[in-house]
Length: 135
Image 1 (cartoon, one colour):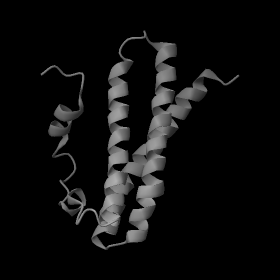
Image 2: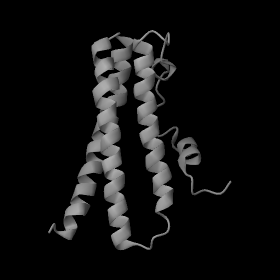
Image 3: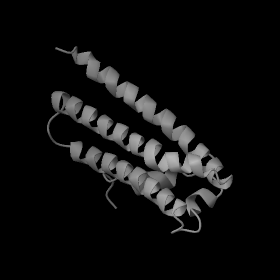
């Protein structure tokens, strides 16, 4: 039998791994896109992003197991929306890159856009991605 703390360590490890991957991915994707590094873009669409989506799914499952062993059954649906949205966005990014590489798109506007300095968009993001807020 696994130590009960194992799942907490696994959760922390997955959060860390996802954070590191996402922190570098945006920068690497934009650089590869701007330099027309199609090999990296193909790798991102076919391997890196799908693996990130799988890791996010693993995190969601780990979180669910912890929730069920710690809290009342209600409330986790909010996390389901958040994990589901994050996974869908990762898959949509991979699909968009694939469409660009196939010539279906002339550009990827998200990668053409100048990045907003860190911290300046927090208030906006919080309003958009917090399904537990009442509007």
